[in-house]
Image (cartoon, rainbow, N blue to C red; front, side):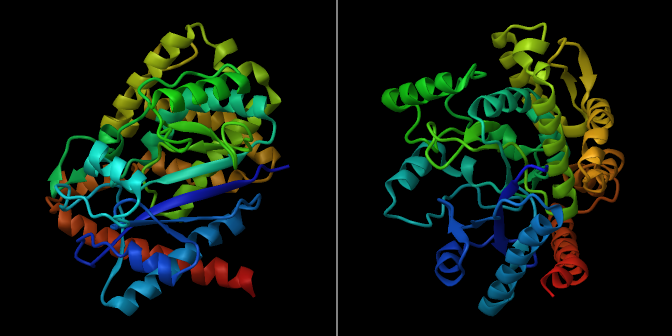
Amino acid sequence: MLLSKGCEVELYTGSPDGEIIGFSNHIVQALAGFVREPDSRNVEYTTAPFRCYNRLLCALVRPRQTLRQYLLGQGNYTLIPGSTLSLGGSQQFHRSDPHNPYHSYIEQTYHTQVVTASVHINIGIADPEQLMRAYRLIRVEAPLYLALSASSPFLDGQVTGAHSTRWSTFPQTPAYVPLFESHPHFVRWTEEQLIQGTMQNVRHLWVSVRPNGDRRPYDLNRLELRICDLISDPIALLAIVALLEARILQLLADKTLDPLQKSTLTPAELLDLTRANEVQAAQHSLEAQLHNWQTGEGINAQDWLQHLYAEVFPVAKQHGFSCFLTPLQQILTQGNEAQRWLRQFHQQQLTPQSILQQAIVRMQVQEQDLQTRICQEMAA
């Protein structure tokens, strides 16, 4: 049986020329299913959990269509791809809720480092100890998902040198988050952080992947992968979801994939390796030189992903969703969004603004095509 899966999608709103403009105050009042972020320039929607990939695809596309129609009603406004304030605006925080004390804390502590757009992927796992095993495995492999999804090479109209400027600058907190050995370990650790003030609340755990649930840390039911940049192409996003689900299904069938059992490294060494891999993946994405968590040996991110793809493809085929995994090959051969944008910048000598303008149109056309070909047929 397939696992349940859903996505939390953060999006920027703005004008067709690429300027990011905040509308979240108005959006959350006018449209059901959207929630505000601390800064008004991006807004979030969350899909329900689905086992079926086609249903998840339409749950990703339909809210964007609704939001686009609303934005057109406000003027000539649209959705902006990318995960940073690509063309400008990083000097000022635009509060969406001036009276929210948690938002005040975020603005004062992190400023616009947190004004990013991303996708959080949630995979349902009911058993808390299985969930902790999945957390440990995906934590050490999270840099691979960042390498696939990087889409933020620009900030304030400049090339930053990083493929994921978002993850390069995003304030991961608390500074040290262990590879939890068990659910009780996770509970104890979380309670300690709340007492010490390193976490303001149970949501204030900003790390690449985390256990999640309706009453965390006590009642858990899903794994949340938080490292991915915004993936504007829904088909590419489904491919990354499929990779994550296939890897977790593989782990559920083979408990020895647990890094605490499979690796020759100590837990402390595993965390050091993972942090270094995240830095490299944020900087170079698929071109990054990483270190494999099982042995510590160096490996190129693209090569590692090819090995992982070959390893999990039979799992996806056995469970009937390998067709959703295959678009991963296009990312591996043609590059992620950041790499494609950087090629346009360096080889075609396009400006960041013209690159964003083309990406805005492409994103809209992709969504409309999927809405017409797949989602309208499913709704009929």
